[in-house]
Length: 240
Image (tube, rainbow, N blue to C red; front, side):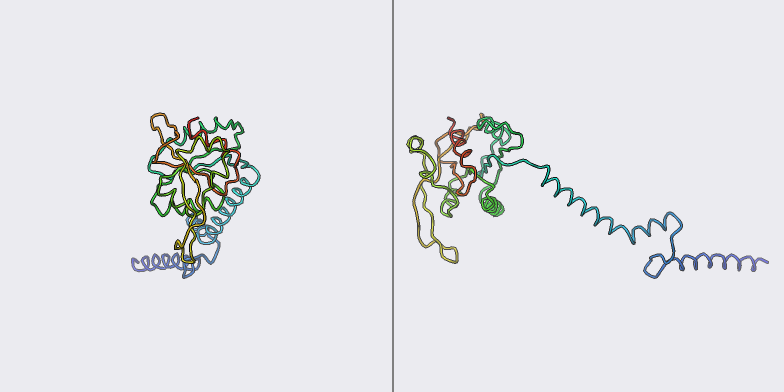
């Protein structure tokens, strides 16, 4: 009697296992519609999880694109990049320069960005920003100024500033040459000599720049599209 009962239990257990095997393929995926909660969850993971993730990513991208095209109407009024070891209070400077330029439109931004000199990532970032016309003014240490002036990235101040301001700045104007290079990028001569920068000092306690000094140099990016704001902003950095 006991043997017969054990035999029935074994047959019942085998029946359950066979039922599971009928529902499951060798890969673990269901051949028939899942019934239990666990089966439904596994079925969703197997067949619908990846498509759901893809759809959500596409929707997020579409929303971001629509937002940038139709709702994000901010534009840069002036962009300043500081490439120096001295780290100014950029938030305070942005607010002060915005007030100085009398920019009240909230959709127009005045920004300061910080880059560390002597770093390949900084050089690549700045070159990319300049190529995209995303930088208007640069504040640099002398080595960076020398590099970007010779590379032709900076505007000649004689062509930009009026004679009165040039005369006032004369003691602090920084002269450089634009280099000519061969196909390998080696300097083979110089095309032009001119004034491409203004010597500055930074007062950390007051968070202001002032005219004069050899540690920092203010320069205008050659392809700026905001010449009017640039000319209005230069006296701000001279503390005038």
